[in-house]
Each structure stands twice: as structure tokens, then as C-alpha cells.
Length: 163
Image 1 (spheres, rainbow, N blue to C red):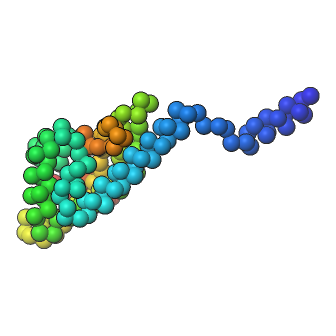
Image 2 (image 1 turned 90 degrees about the horizontal axis):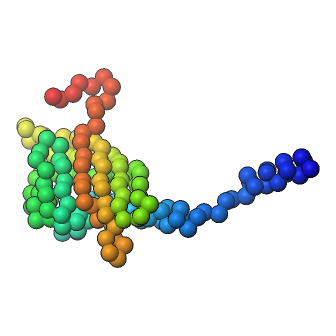
Image 3 (image 1 turned 90 degrees about the vertical axis):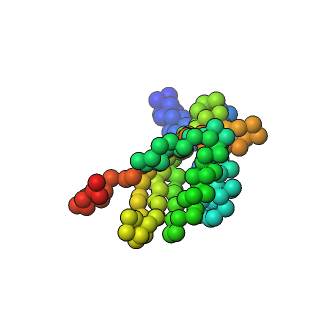
């Protein structure tokens, strides 16, 4: 009897457990959110300001480092348009994680980013950072960013901070 119990326990451990419907739904939502953030990163590598802005909600707020928050789609559109006019400006990011609420209507992503822009002397410089974006799953199932926050990563060990 003890041997049968051990064999049964071993088989249960080796067999894949069925995923609950809720777990599968959450996993699918998380994958869709990561895919959306990746698509947005690809759009940000272009000069198509309207495509870039389309990933934010109308009531979104962005929090650039050392700047005042930018609230609403009109202000964000202007911010993006002005950024794209800066000679040498570039932005890229890589989403690392997505988390979705049990209800599936809110989520967030985190990752790393990189900005290239001219410094005070006009030389191109790159700033590496981290970000958190809060997303809302809108009617029709489209994820759109509600809060966009990023900051600079700490300097690499042995490198003095520019401040």
C-alpha cells in the first residue's frame, strides 16, 4: 500500500497540472500586456509621433526625471513632438515584467530604458534608466498606458554620479 502511494505521488508530480481558467486568463493578459509594451517600444524607435502617442490614454500622466509631470494626451503629444525634434534624440526600452490584476482591467510593466540626447555642450550622451508603466485594459481589450514613470539607473560601480 505504501509503495502504491509513493508511485501515485510520483506520477502526480510528473504530470502537468491543469491550469485554472482564471490562471490561463491572467497569463494571456500578461502576455498581451508585454506584447503591447514591446510594440510601443518599437514605435518609439520611429519618428511617427501619432503612433507613439496612441499607446497612452487620454487622461495619462507621464513623470519624466527632473521635470514637471505632463498630463493629458494633448500635453503628451506636444512633449513627444518636441522630443522628436531634438537632434540626435533617441529612446528605447525593454520590458522585463508584466503584472495584471485578477480582474484583468489594470496592469503594470517594468523594465530598462535608454535615452540619447545632446548634453549642455551639444555632445550626444546616453542615459540609462528604469521604468514603471501602469496600464488600463480598455473596451475591446486594448492595453493603454495611464501612468508612465522613469528615472535614471544608478551609476555603474566605480563611476562618479554626474550630480
